[in-house]
Length: 237
Image (cartoon, rainbow, N blue to C red; front, side, top):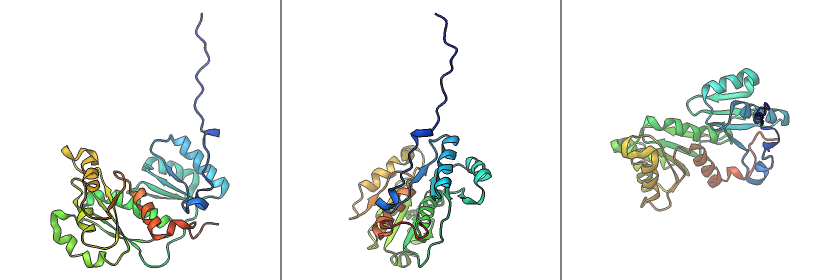
């Protein structure tokens, strides 16, 4: 029997994509789009759908070249930050009021993950203070800022390697501390698994952790604690 000449049909997102339009009403969070595992055409279709609905989007893990091609189509509706690989689509109002979250990092290698958290908070109308390179390898750097850090109700502590920073910080301040272990490091750091196990084994009472490099998840945890996720964004219609 002769082989069929019909080619396998190319996958189209089409009816497979269903926007979670009720998420903001249900949780106070808009739907966030993880771009990294999606094809460029899939991301384009999702953004196009949001444009037709007049909706805003937070896009995460979006590489710069793909963001540039999206911007060529959607123009100034796309606000992209290369360091955090995040983009806002649509109208995002600047936060009002004082900072309620402080984001600290063990080293400058962790800043990209920090910025993912900061940009997520900003999207939801919460401004954050950023304090970087205060890891415990030079403990005086942290102690020099600790009185300032105590002034915030929520702290996001981002660190790789042995991830000692979140434990030390949670032992020094009364704030709700969210640990973000990062993949920074080499050898037995094992892509962040050692950092994750360290914070999960922490003796600091009440310290919680999100997954490796999950700045977005840490920001959402902070928003829940602050109650900022209980209602739609300030600019949401």
